[in-house]
Amino acid sequence: PRIGVVVVAAGSGQRLGYGLPKAQVPLAGRTILAHALEGILASGIAERICVAVPPRDSVLREVCTGASGQVPVTAVEGGASRAASVSRALAGLGPDLDGILVHDAARALTPPEVFVRVVEALAAGAKAVIPAVPVADTIKTAVPSAADQQAIAGEKVAGTPDRSLLRAVQTPQGFDAAALTAAHRSLAAMGPLEAEGITDDAMLVESQGTEVFLVPGSPEALKITTPLDLMTAEALVAARDR
Ligand code: CTP
Ligand code: MG
Image (cartoon, rainbow, N blue to C red; front, side, top):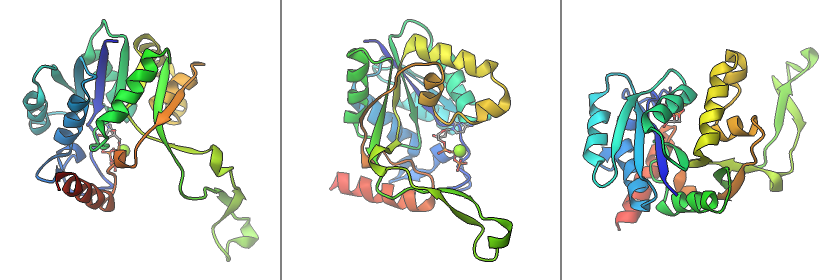
C-alpha cells in the first residue's frame, strides 16, 4: 500500500521543561525529531512524510530537509492542539495514499518493526490499527472524597478495572486514508468541549464507528514526556550503540 506518515512535532514540551520545543531537545547529540525520522525511514514503509513543527521553527524545518533522501519529508506549521497539528500535516501530506500513519515525534525511539506491524495490519484490511502494550500498574478510577472525608484525603477509589483488559497505546497509529481524513473533518465540526475529550486519532475514528485493531507495541516506543523519560531514552540509545 501507498503509505504517508504524519509526524506531530509542534508541541512546546512544558513537562520536559527544557526551555526548547520538545522535538528540538538533544538526545544523544541529535534532536528528538531527527531520531524519530530515522526510525520511520529505517522501517521502509513511508512513501512520503509530513511533519508539523512549531511556527517559525527554522531548526526543525532544517531537520526535515536534512532527513529527506529517497522519501520526501515536508514541514508544515502545527496548531494549538495535537489534533490541530495532525489536521494541518494531513493536508500537507497530499492525496493519493492508501494509508496514513500518525506518529508522535516524542516517541523518538519507536523500533522500525512497530511501523511494519501497523502497515501489515492495514494491508490485511484494517481501517484502523494501533500499537499497544499491557499495563504494568494496577489502575484505579478516582473520585473526590465526601465533604466529611476531606480531612483523610482529597480523593478515594471508585473502582478497579480488570487489568487484563487494559492496554497502554502508543504511536504510530495507522488508518485507511479516507477514514482518517473524514474523521478529521468531523472533528472540525465538533464543539470545543467534545473535541477536547478526544485524546488520540484512534478515539476519533472510534467515534465514527470504525473498528480499531491492536498490534503489539514496544516498551522502547516510550513517549518522552518528563526529564526521567529523557534519561531513559539516553540510556536506550547508549545500549543500542553498544
Ligand atoms: N504536539 C503537536 N502540536 C501541539 C501539541 C503537541 O504537534 N499543539 C505533538 C508533540 O510535539 C508531541 C506529541 O504531539 O510529539 C505528543 O504531545 P506531548 O507529548 O504532550 O508533547 P508536548 O505538548 O510538546 O509536551 P507538554 O504537553 O509537556 O507541553
Ligand atoms: Mg502536550
